[in-house]
Structures are given as structure tokens and as C-alpha cells.
Length: 100
Image (cartoon, rainbow, N blue to C red; front, side, top):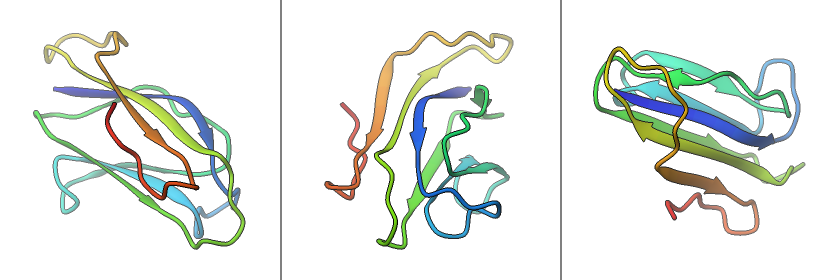
């Protein structure tokens, strides 16, 4: 099971998240979408049912925030801890979110 926790979120704000957003999927992009996030309101921990999670960031290249910072970890199916083992980061100037 994969857990993802946003530590920072600063994307263009829009009530429908139409312009800049992060989608998080349980498994692949064809799986259940766990959420679409924009603006600065961070969701709680997102947890998959299996061992895969896909994170997709979309930007319209106009108004930009500073991006996002999230940590992910592998947890046992019955755990809901937030112990981070890896870091996922986005910065608009790089147009990428490398795993560090």
C-alpha cells in the first residue's frame, strides 16, 4: 500500500481546479482518482488499495504558484502512519517533479 502526504501545495487557485492541479490515482491513471488538488489547501494522507500510485501534475503555463512538496511511503495495508521514506517535489521553473 502507498501513502502520500502533501507537505506544501501552492498551485493556481480555481474552485474547479481547471488550470493547474495535481491528480492522484490509486494504481494507474485508469484507476480510481483519489483526488484533484489545486490552490493551497492540503488534503490529508492519500492511501492506495494496492502497491501503485500515479501522481500527475497539469499546468496551463499562465498563473503559477511555487508547486508542491509531497512525501510517499510504503505501508502495511492496516497501517495509516505518515512516516516518510521518499520525497516528491515540483517547482514550476523546472516543469518536473523529480524523486530525490
